[in-house]
Image 1 (spheres, one colour):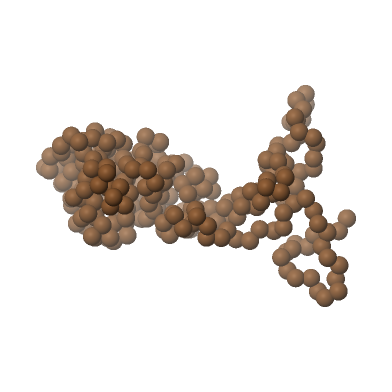
Image 2: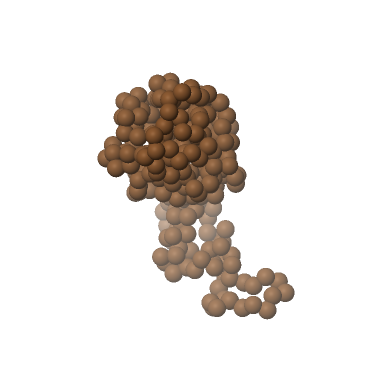
Length: 256
């Protein structure tokens, strides 16, 4: 059997025999800037929350109760943290006036079902270059937020009014959705959920996500060419000592 070179993408010398065709796809190039990459913010290199979560190997997923306020909302950027009071939004007004451009506001309002955020604060945030909000609490003016294209991820939707008495604390560690978030951590949110990557792990997680995306692209190419997921993930054989048999015909696992 012809041995496949370590780098099958390199051209063969003139006159050399052509490489033998196999059932595996040719080596895949780095992922192209397809729809996923175009739609996701650049701060996360275009990766989705699911990819970032799996590639991280860490418990970085915020609990699934935090949902986009409008369909299709997505955001990514360094966190600017806000420790507020449920039912009061003065801390958010202060955060909008204080946070550096490009930072995502991440606010702990203890899950309170009050309309802590709406159209006025969203416009103010956009003017100051803030790309979105993640809040453990409720918001309102959802249709206006959608028309503005301002992404918000919240615990709920509520028109209940808020007070403006408690200034809160800005830029300190907070816990949102079961995950501690510090100022400068990378926060990413999309239709699947939200993750917070500690600042010290951002480069590693993004690099691992690049690799995972390239691998999954190869898997998709192989599946479209006829491979099964049992083959690709090495699941085609029953565990040692098991009497179970695979419903599919026995096939060799692809080379890794």
